[in-house]
Image (tube, rainbow, N blue to C red; front, top):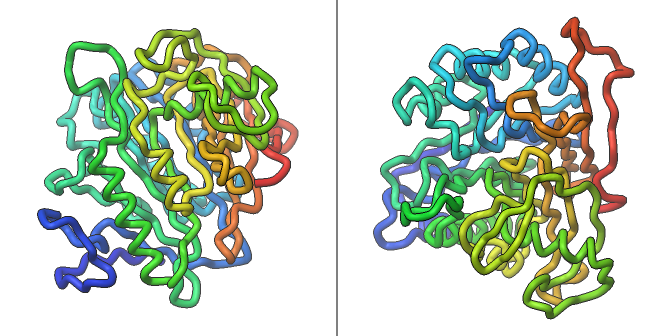
Length: 373
């Protein structure tokens, strides 16, 4: 059963907030008891339900992915819709609520507020569902509509944390079509949340992070994979190293100042989020969407001393046909976490549409993203 704690009393160990913080850290946390030997999280990316969508077809497709995966939790990594209305968004969340899932959560993309509704509607709608784990905080002091944490707990300890962050929309200057980034105050919030969990457990708690827009490190990892570099690189055009990779970058290249030509539709600058995650040592995997053709994943490290503890940088398979340009590349990522908090399995689940909306076991195809995490 989901329990969300929102305390008003500040306890120094748990609530080491910045002086002007609007909410104590526990406000941002939903706690879920760990049941069974493992818990499965399915990432659904860029569903893009819209006015032109066949909603019966799209709902059958999403339900088939969820049912086959055996997932306990679904996290949608943004752009759930594109030019929709309240009925369409409600139909999507109804499908999640009525599925076998125990819980679901939504990260926001750059298109979710673009519809015939008030920009606050998607978040308010999600909060009306009993399975929704979102925590809405539009008036807090952390940038973005919604940044929150899902704690998987066992015996009074936090086993694993699922961070859901708002990677925002467009460059805040308004003079560029480049995308925005995770902001500095969000990174500071993330650091405080990692410290909160360490304070409770007495040790760093493993975690994973879900957001919409990829980091510059996705491009660095891809360049390393294409160059066939083994070991550590100090070349500023592709710094760091990789321990394994799979998938491809199929998007058309474009130019980002400071990054150069890239197939990653990343934010306008290196936000520093990866560097902070690597420094803290909690987050073991990051999952994004946004780039519909890309399914690349890499075990990447930015500093040589972290070569034995890389972070998995993963694109989610696109989980629906809206704005799909790459045939045979639809589906979802499925992550399995054991009772120690380790990620014991990370797979792509491929599924093509079936004309009759009926899905058989032979229609699904699994692929290990890495040999080992």
